[in-house]
Length: 453
Image 1 (cartoon, rainbow, N blue to C red):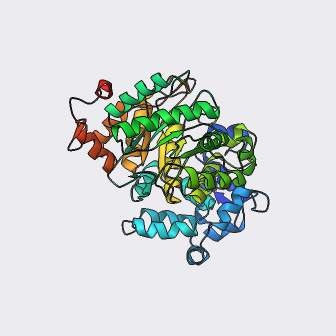
Image 2: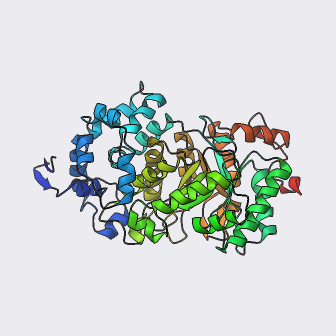
Image 3: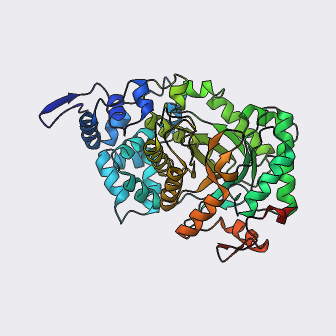
């Protein structure tokens, strides 16, 4: 594998694929914090030139974290279709980029190619692509999944209703849910982040959301985003859960910090398949985000973009219904400003979709980050253009429990209107029945939560 290059009369020598991947990355404060970022723009360009000319076999034969040392690496390695891999092994990373961007390359062809790709190959392609490249390539990819009802069709944009409450008040969650539904949000999932991580509290929230779904015959699914072990206890105690949720990291050590392992996820998967309340077949909701492995000192010197791609390689094993990157939630230590957040959102969406993941994005930032709501609205429109499966909706774009800024219910409705996108098909029919939408456009009744009171 070539690791040395002369560029503008200066020779650059890199020690490993891991170093080339890290230094080819767009500027990220997380990589700088880890001490693995390029020293300047010229070194970054040199690393990209080298990376572009590496073959896919170079990447597979030089693992950033060997499968005998890490169970996430093992899951990714075992997922590869060897016949398809052999047919593309001699492609360079630049070849992969060109094929993804070619007008003649269809979703069907990309679906075949992905079965021969490792997560590191996907990350490598992202690193040599511009923002517009990422949007163009991803806009071709359609990933449709079904829990109770399908989402992900081209021309649609779903929304997760996130009616969180600072004390887990059932009445407060219900009121916020009514507002979300009144704006046509909730087709991806009604998903609540609980304050209290107890099986009884999770059960109560699941029971309430299931009652509302049944009462109004809403074509959606419910989920409470507690730790997976808490959800498992709630389900065993009779809680009506359509989806299981868990945050993922891109290394075994990172997942250990989250209190999970592949073995635990396998056990949970068996439980939701047997005792979950949804029709299926896709019964998982995962969340990710660049920088989580660094925050738990579990990154092994690997850059955060490559680690994020590995999260999707792990998620793929469980055939999830939805996955989203909480793109700016961890803070400026990992993504310093709006430019880095926008880039990360487009990278994550591309890397997930290329691996066959039904990707959404929580377009968000923390209040100590150099970003504002206009930046998030820009990213939401870019992602809508790229064909993102869903966005997150919180009241007034301000989560009163998690204390961060995201997109509002009305923001998602506005992105749909501007880009000519529709809700998920069954959900749109329900909105029409409720008088909230007509021919893809919100009616005068929209935005009035008293419709459900």
